[in-house]
Image 1 (spheres, rainbow, N blue to C red):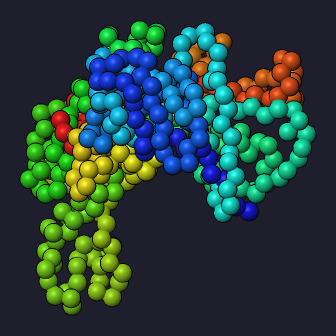
Image 2 (image 1 turned 90 degrees about the horizontal axis):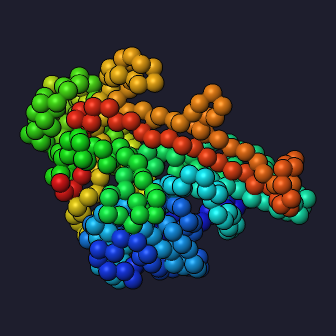
Image 3 (image 1 turned 135 degrees about the vertical axis):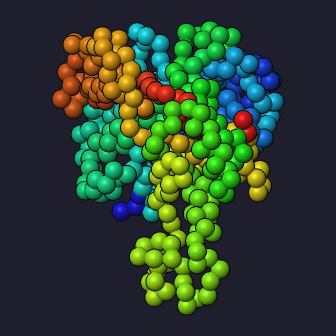
Length: 402
């Protein structure tokens, strides 16, 4: 059975008709080859980056055909000039209190020899007639599930996409600025990890540290902050290789004969063994554990924002994030006392009667639902959350440009 291709949630060729400084009502056109509609919906939040590295965050306020209209979270409005080619990807959504759910529903588009395991969305709808027309499809999904699914195949993919959104929103979200179009419409945004570290943490703006001198500068900065002993560095592929290359050059056998072999890696890499060129971490004043971050390598998300100018990194491209391990003591207002909390954790809005961490419910008159006269089944998803970045001065964001 072929794999199904889901509608794209990233576009590589979009242009705006609005001028620099416009804060709301900016109309964007999707010019990607084969795009017949914009797979963007009202209420979704998008990350926009031009080929020259200018960046905007925005909330979608209208969609028509291959165009969508946005209001910007930044107080300065649109940063790029009209007609400049940009990349756009969806990272989440934001709705006003007391409003209806997501409008519209994305469906899988079958294509020979391809099957996408996820359709990123927060509501799935199937009408009663389609539910009565059984057709089983063999699938393999991103979370490892395999087997045969009926109409719930698309609902399953919807769930995966929504789970992606609630994670990337915690990374990419920014608060709406006072003079922004988003705040004028009632949206407030949120402080994601990148925003907090970029504004209140430490920023390495010279690309990737590639030698011990660079890392000594990083360590010197950490010495002036919380001096957390153990740290995890989440990196993209290029950053990971730069660390491996740096550590390899420090090896005593570097430049030796083939008979000597290289002594770094598994079991000192005997000459008769397969050479392991990777490192999981190193210690220099502090312990640094290296971990490849799929999000920074994903070509449809942050990974697709790299190398937009030939051979060089562009201003704003994030290559890694240093996160302190362990926990810190904070005063919890709800508990009314000091408590230990991880440096990075997510908080949810909840009470005894309502828990909004991850809600899902079914409406309609099909598929067992009997709470409306709609001849369909609608599966709704909702989460209300924010990320808490404690001790932002202990974090470091690696990027191009300050």
